Structure formats: structure tokens, C-alpha cells
Length: 349
Ligand code: ADP
Ligand code: ZN
Image (cartoon, rainbow, N blue to C red; front, side, top):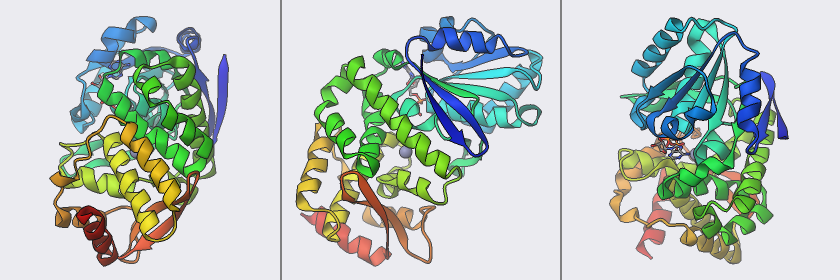
């Protein structure tokens, strides 16, 4: 069995890869005092039978990341008489992972949980690092906790049933790892976009493994987001602003990140940081992803307002993680006026 150790300061745990995870997780689960699996309707119908334990099934979709569902899960877990020594299994995409991890951090002041991520985004990003949380009407991920799982179990084969748009969504974060840390990974993925849409496991499997290796190392060095972990926000300054400025109705998160990477690569070139040849390589990769570039739906002033609220901002400046080359990024702080000037020039082109 292929494993990778993640050493987060608040606790070490393994990432497990491959088709053997189901049996391995089944065995681990039997050593706990009670187990429950939580999933959504789509994923449960496809994969819940592989984990023969009591099951809570929720509705798919971002709306499920709510206080209501936390309360509902707490109630169901109490009903199942889960103790402090029980285990909760989060089987699904980022929505299930975030909600279940957060609820696990609260139930009986903290109960063990594991992640079985089933979307590309969740496998390469959200299941690793211990960020959990829910949305409220006042903000996405407004409430949450850093709470590490006891393990993450990744079987890339489950991506075979994933809708196409969710592959695009995941490619945003995959290409991001290449730009921030690994030029060879970027090149490989850039050449292999069709293999992702076909879920060719000989390509996709090793890429996922490399992505979580990068994320695991970054998270181990900086568990709570103040230092090195900030580089994971490449593509996310513009990305988050695009999502927010369109009321979270136009783009999936990873799609917004793809557009954000496109804009931030251009910004890096505009500022003289990124050579033209590297910009062309990044643009070529992003153009191979099945995504329409729909910046025209975005109002500039709304976008600038959203950029002004980015959580990385400080001293009145907007923070960007920009590439110097493919595989190396740095933080740059810009005023709103500088960003507006760039936007006018790039979008006017
Ligand atoms: P994300 O991981 O991007 O946060 P979600 O958790 O909302 O996304 O999952 C996206 C959608 O994909 C949901 O409708 C979910 O039910 C569905 N889904 C998740 N994993 C699979 C899978 N392996 N096969 C088919 N559908 C899946
Ligand atoms: Zn992201």
C-alpha cells in the first residue's frame, strides 16, 4: 500500500493511495468504538457499499455546508451512540469533507475522523491540511476550525464517475501546484489535459500523489496559514474576487482559480516579474482546459471592491502570489489604483 506521512504540528497522519484503501480503511474502522460514514446522495449511491457501516446521507451541493446540517449530524451521531472513541468517515467532495471535519471537531469536544475524498479538488487540495468549515448567509467558510483527520484515503479510480465540469474544477488547483513549486509537474499536466478528462489513471494517479506531496510539505511547515502556506493562494486573489463579484453563481471555485491564474500570470508579466515565454506556456495550458473565458460578466468596480476584502491584504494593499518563473512564486503588494490600471490595460487589449 502506497502511503505518505503528513507531519502537521497538531498531529501526524498518513495519506493512503490506490484501490486498496477500502479494505485498509475497513480494517482501521473496526478498531474504533463505533463508526459512521457521512456522504451525499450522489456519492453514497456509487460508493457507500464499499464501507459497510451506518450511513448518514446528505443532499449534494454547497448549501449543505450549513449550521443546520451540523446540528442534524450531531443529532444523528448521538442517536447512533457514538462515543469519544468512535470514528467518522467523510466520503465525498469538499462539501462533505469540510462539513464533516468541522462537525467532528465539535462533537464531544472532538472525535476522530478520516477523509475519503471523491472529487479531484478534494483529492489534491481540500482533504489535506485540516481546514474545515461551513458557510453562513454572511460568508463562505465564515465559520470553521483547523482540525486534522486521522488519515486521508485516496482512490483516484472514483474520479471515473465524476462529471466533466468537476475535472475542470480540479485542474485549477492541480496546475496551481505546478506554477508555485514544480515546473516539471506543470509541464506534464499541461501536456496531459485530455488524460485528465479521460481519467487515465496511469497519468492522473501519480499527478494527484505529487500534488498532495507538495501540499503536505507546505502544510507541515505552516499549519495555520501565516507563512509559507500563503503561496497556495496563487490564482486565488483574482479567483476569490471573481467568485465573490459574481455572487458564487457563475464559477465553480477551481474555475475561478484558473481564471485567477491567467490574470495573475499576466499581472506578473506586466510588472516585469515573469518572462514572456513562461506567460505563453501558462496561457497555453489554461487554454487547453475546457473553460470559457468569461471575464465580461464581471463588473470592474465590483471586482475591485472584492479584491479590497481579500484576507491576505495588509496596510491597505492587495496581496498577490505571483510567478517569477513556472515553479517559483513570490508575494507582491499592490494598491487598488495599480490593479485598476493593469485591469484596464489587460482587459482593454
Ligand atoms: P468540491 O469537491 O468541488 O467541493 P462537491 O463536494 O460539491 O465539490 O462535489 C461536487 C459534485 O460532485 C457533487 O454533486 C457530488 O455529489 C458529486 N460527486 C463527488 N464525487 C463524485 C464521484 N466520485 N462521482 C460522481 N459524482 C461525485
Ligand atoms: Zn482553492
